[in-house]
Amino acid sequence: MNRSLEIRKFYKPVQPTVDQASVNVSYTEFLPDIQLQEVIYCYWQLKTSEVLTEPFSYRVVADGCIDIFFELTNPADSYVMGFCKKFTEFPLDNSFNYVGIRFFPTMFPQLFKINAKELSNHFEHLDQVVPAVSDFIRNTMDSSQSREKIGILLDTYFLEVIKNGSFDRDERLYGALQLIFMKKGILDVEADLQTGISSRQLRRLFDFYIGVTPKIFSQVVRFQAVLGAKPYTESLRENKLFFDAGYYDQAHFIKEFKNFYGVTPGKAFGR
Figure 1 (cartoon, helix red, strand yellow):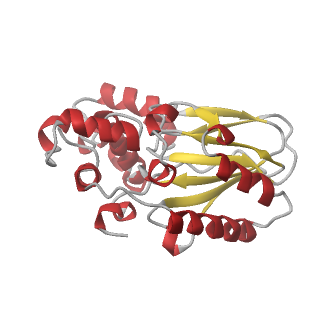
Figure 2 (cartoon, rainbow, N blue to C red):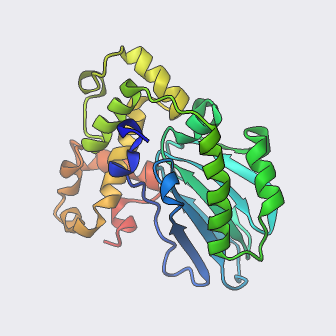
């Protein structure tokens, strides 16, 4: 793929690992085939190793991506979740084995010609959005498969999808995305995103390919940059992290972080 689609160079969406207190539950990300790595950020698996004593609540933070997910014990029931401008909590049973495909921003609409705006802030049954992918999951996946086998099956399918698909390599859209990623979301959308089209046209591109405005997407990228800076959270104690992330005051930082994550920065980082 050409430069305009090389999102992995600039963006690594972070989802928190399962809380260490959640024994017998694991969350694992694993890479797709190298030919898919500019389209799919990762495959992931969330599963229990033993039946839990009580139901489990799983939190997904805002990351700018679109995910397909399904339960391996019931692959006929698969879903797609669009861009979310706040965290989402999923109440799960005492035993589960979920598998997901996390697409980089813009890539799900590119592959399947779906308007991302129609998926924003909720999830839909996959068979109502992309029936062919739903049929593949239903007919191919089952709970006896190892993670390695699942990866091979997903790779084989999506390599064929890419081979038969086409991409709209609009340099105006991907130029704007690159600026947002390089500046870690810290920019004036109106002044800084000068890519050769009007702000109204750019917003239409973001609506279709990402599902949200450039401003909200930039806020999520900024939030994700904070998560990616976790090794340096000593600045949190010194009240400097919000300045580094382009916030003008701590109250705004905490409010926005809690909206995207579900808890305050201090709780998220264990401080």
